[in-house]
Structure formats: structure tokens, C-alpha cells
Image (tube, rainbow, N blue to C red; front, side, top):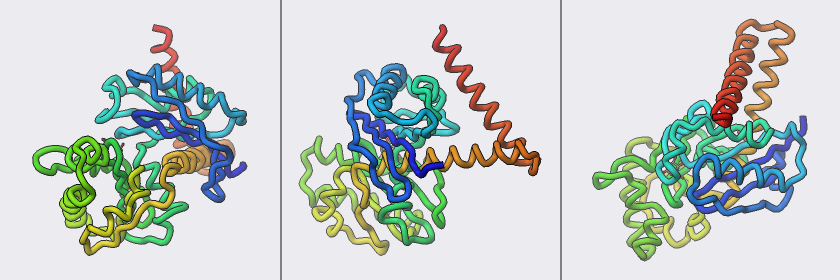
Length: 291
Ligand code: BGC
């Protein structure tokens, strides 16, 4: 199996995608961006994702990883902080698999960025608890313990001044309230001190578009934890989603192979369960589409 997968990053304003070389973490072609439909309903976004994939000439069996800015459990969106509320309860994985014809694996956007940083960027040489915090429209988090992701940690929603912290210190808030760098850094200081106290991480990696201007705010923070900018910047979501898609597809294939040989009863059952779940998901989407 070649070390390639397709990554798509669904954001509030744009949907970006490209094929990724997973040996190096580099994009194999220039990424394509299309505007996120407004309103960003599941149906409209699914069409946009299908259109984006169709603009590339990729093999049918290439796995596709997709980021989504919400809690994702077994492919289903459980929250919708900064996206259309119609997403809550949507089986994003099944919807996009059906609409694109590819095996789609959906992951929280910050978790995807975190996977990319741990594999190819600022988290490569770490141990212990590592936090990747993305500062954008909202604030996302990816938590790793000895390199293993603890998914959906949602640290942007820790309470600060009585509300979700992201409403106080997201990058979008800096822009909206026209805060100067120092004032914004003061808010980040409150947030990161709290996070540091709760988790005692070994390293904090700061991502999101604003991380390319890290010189303006990271040096102003005083923490006992090493805090560094993300290295992959804009491409972290695409790369992380692609890496996850390949990993997931590989483990499904491996489990299926084992089940063929009936060498391991437990894996056979696992593979059968997964296949059954995926088929049920597809069925469900078809039924919904036929309504
Ligand atoms: C969402 C997270 C997401 C983050 C960054 C938050 O509002 O709850 O799921 O990772 O924004 O997009």
C-alpha cells in the first residue's frame, strides 16, 4: 500500500484539500480551496467536499481524512460551537463516505493538527503529556500522552470568566475587539497558566493561522512549560487528517486480513463489527437521502 492519503480541512470560511505524502508529511499537489457554503449545512458541505475531491485525479481506494471543528465520536458530530447546529448528531463519516465514494475518516480539527505536529512537526521528540492548542475562530486542543492521542479534549471550552475560554482569548476575539498584542497576550497568559496548572504538560505547541506571528505574543508569556509555535501552520489539518485516514484504513485492512485467515478470533470479531458498523452507517445515510 502506498504511503499516500488525501486530507481535507473543513473550516468556517474555507474547505481545503490535497493529497499527502505520508513518508514526508508534504503535499503531493498544490492544495485546492473552496469557500465553505453558507449556511454550512451538512448537505451543502458534503457537496463541496465531493467537488473538491473530484477536482483531483486520485485512485478510488485512496483513503480520505477530513477534519471537522466539533467533537467527533465514531464519525458522528456531537457538538457545533462555530458551525451550523444541523451538524449535531450527523454521521459525518458516513455522509462523506457516501457522497464522495471514498473511505472517509473524520476527526476533530485540532486533533488532526496535533497528529500532524506529533508526526512531522514540533511534537516529534516529545514524551509525557503534550498539548497542541490551536488559536483560530475557536480554540481547539489535542492532548497526547506518550504520543497517544486522547481525542476530543476541548480545552478551548474550559471556563474562564464564566464562559468558554475561547470567547475570551481566541484569535478571532483579538481581531474582533482589536486588541493589541500585549493585551491579547495577557489573556493568553491567564488561559495557559490555568491549562498548565491542570495538566503539567511537558510541552505546549501553539497552532492556528496566528501562529505564524508567534514572535508577537509567545515571548510575552511566562510559563514553566516550554511553549513553542506549530511547525506545519496552514497545512497541519490536511496532513494530520490524511495520516489518520491511512492509519485507520490500514488497521481495518489488517483486522480484515486476520479475520480471513481466522487466525485470531478477537480480531476477526473486531473486523466484522467494524465492517458491519460501516455498512449500517452507509445504509442509514442512503435511507436519509431517499426521504
Ligand atoms: C470546537 C472544537 C474545535 C475548535 C477549533 C471549538 O469551538 O468546540 O471542536 O476543535 O473550536 O476549531
